[in-house]
Length: 224
Figure 1 (tube, one colour):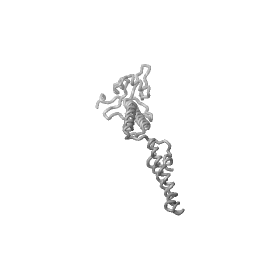
Figure 2 (cartoon, helix red, strand yellow; figure 1 turned 30 degrees about the horizontal axis):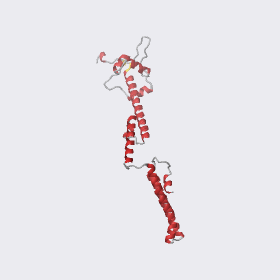
Figure 3 (cartoon, rainbow, N blue to C red; figure 1 turned 45 degrees about the horizontal axis):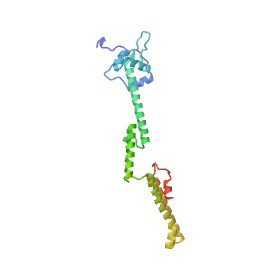
């Protein structure tokens, strides 16, 4: 190997901990030798403009030799590469985080899971979807294929009242019709109360938990 084949000697440069970490994460490609370059050369290497390189320097891109007073800036290729790759990785991570939070917030607004396609829709698409859903619901109501939630709650309350009144009045009725003893009446009363409690617990725990229904004590309203 001749002297012409030897790469130029690099300027002595101090590397702080942050840059050292960036260099470990983002080394130059194996086929590329390190070099000290001016701003024009770095601009060509990164396929950008000198103005952009100047902005990067102001933003904190490492400089091997500060320019000024007739002296040109000297930039270490490996340092610039590692700094740029670290910045892009940080921006990608921030964008992914932000997109994830946007999806979570959209899902919260829509009441769907994050993976649901509706959570990925734009505001215009969500509005159009909501309008279409409202039109569909109105049509289904007119065809009597849907029931208003309040109507269903009223129906359940009326049925619950019939069941409750029947079970609560059953001990006295059986006492009269079957001539039960006081002990037998007490057993019937206890069984009726157990049935009411079991039905109320079933409604509260299995059917209505997590639903958007006014008055969380609906089980008590229906049966107790």
